[in-house]
Amino acid sequence: MTRPAVLEIRDLRTYFYSRAKEAFIRSVDGVSLAVAAGETLGVVGESGSGKSVTALSILSLVGGSPGVITGTIEFAGATGAGTARRNLLEDLGRYVRVSERDGRIVAVTKDEPGWRARVERALTGVRGKEIAMIFQNPKSSLNPFLTVGQQISEAIRLHTPVTDAGEAKQRAIDWLERVRMDSPRLRFDQYPDGLSGGMCQRAMIAMALASEPSLLIADEPTTGLDATIQSRVVALLAELKSEFGVTTLLISHDVRVVSRLADTVAVMYGGTVMEHGPARDVLAPGSEPKHPYTAALLASLPSAQTNGGRRTVDGRLPVIRGEVVDTMDVPRGCRFYARCDRVTEAIRARCLGQEPALATVAAGHRIRCHLYAGETCAETRPG
Ligand SMILES: Nc1ncnc2c1ncn2[C@@H]1O[C@H](COP(=O)(O)OP(=O)(O)O)[C@@H](O)[C@H]1O
Ligand code: SF4
Ligand SMILES: [Mg+2]
Image (cartoon, rainbow, N blue to C red):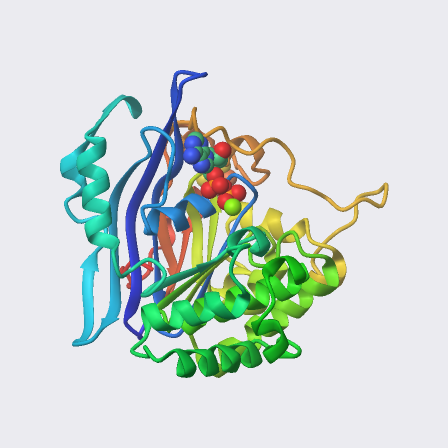
């Protein structure tokens, strides 16, 4: 990676406790990834693989008990004086202790008030301003009691140097135009309830970009919209990307959305990153090397999109066999073992007994699989 990283996550772990099962859920379990300035990093993986919890952990927005986050999240955000690089999790370790025995978490102790106070101090001015987020279900993310225009204008007055109400209004209308909202002046005065799902997502995107963030996090921005609207929102995000070049962390379970928008891709499974590299290498069907999980994700796509997708004899699309790994009971070896069809006798014992490391297989391309364990090339920088 030649451009500086705006976000660099190292060994992020976010754990919850299930009282019902009396066990810790390792929702995010050692994630490392980086987003370079101006690029879009796509995070892809099946439902439950830890994508949203990774995004929420960046802003310490994880609820639940005890909701523990450890690791490093280095963020280089723009400030009045230039760019400041800091660890958003700095000092949080003082408020929590995770005890493990034989690779299993046995206890977590947390000073909740101290933790919360520290999070508020660290993230004031970051949430919504330096890092903006757009979610699935845009309608429920907008305030139903304020017009679309009021919400965008407020974001502009809170997060940019503009304080004059008239100027903020004009800027808000400009942003509604930029997100190709039809009749922007009319929409400015409408409440979210009067808008379709697609229009609400455009309004959310306008509001996020109007804050002029250093990083945009888009978590499943097209999920839940109907198919035609989905492809329009993806087309809009592609246009905005080339127009404004906002550094973006794009999360989607949909490989097609990620392959359309991402420069770099992180493939997540069972709370960790299985493959990380340039989108053209990771998501190109048939190209090697590739993690068996990535290959399985691509094979489950309709053939029109991938050329590599296969239909089963009964005409159905193949899905990845087996269940997503239980993050309450992470296996000692490779967490994809139970579903992997590429285990050879030469590596079976290692697959079962030892978690593979992320090995660098080409410049900027890393794979967590014993099949590629010996392929480490000169590049060692994370991300
Ligand atoms: N607040 C929480 N408390 C307990 N478990 C959670 C919480 N949030 C998420 N999880 C669990 O963490 C795992 C990862 O969730 P998530 O990041 O939402 O997956 P994804 O976004 O990849 O679909 C899931 O098993 C989910 O049930
Ligand atoms: S390490 Fe073994 S089980 Fe895991 S993906 Fe590679 S071949 Fe499959
Ligand atoms: Mg999610």
